[in-house]
Length: 190
Ligand code: FE
Ligand code: FE
Image (cartoon, rainbow, N blue to C red; front, side, top):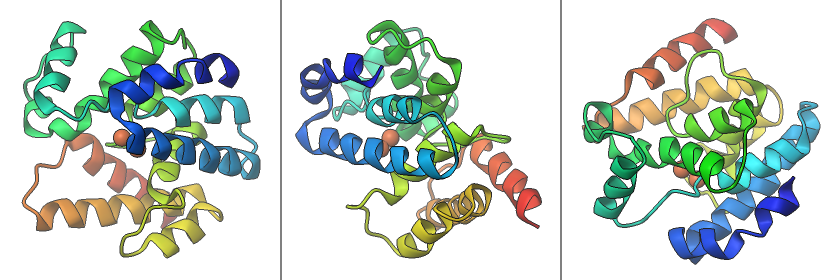
């Protein structure tokens, strides 16, 4: 299945830019590594990793236009947290443009920015691979890498807490999914 998607590499690169495309290749490889550890289908992990940012159009106005055209109304949380639009749009692109019909893959793309309660292993793997791919460098990335290879739920809890702290410090709106997810994984690990 990943071979079918790799055929679209140039098209995706054109849409999201070379730098972002190279990130998606690293997320794909990291997702495959995690999939091996947690006995998740490696091909699904590869496809979801490669496509997770396939709608990350750099120009925000163009991104919003594409979203509207694809039936995503840019209001409510999409208006308040535009950084999440590309995940939802990416899931639609994966289905419409790249013929992905696997619900788990589509959800992994859709929730890779916000997270949500009760995520599947594949969803957690894509969420975490996005944060820990080799070129990522932020406070706590070493700890998050360590946790990701040890326990997906512990890693989710750590990651969501860091994200929420960062967003709060920067006065950025936090979507409810992320808060619910954080509380869910807090219960899971305690
Ligand atoms: Fe993303
Ligand atoms: Fe990403």
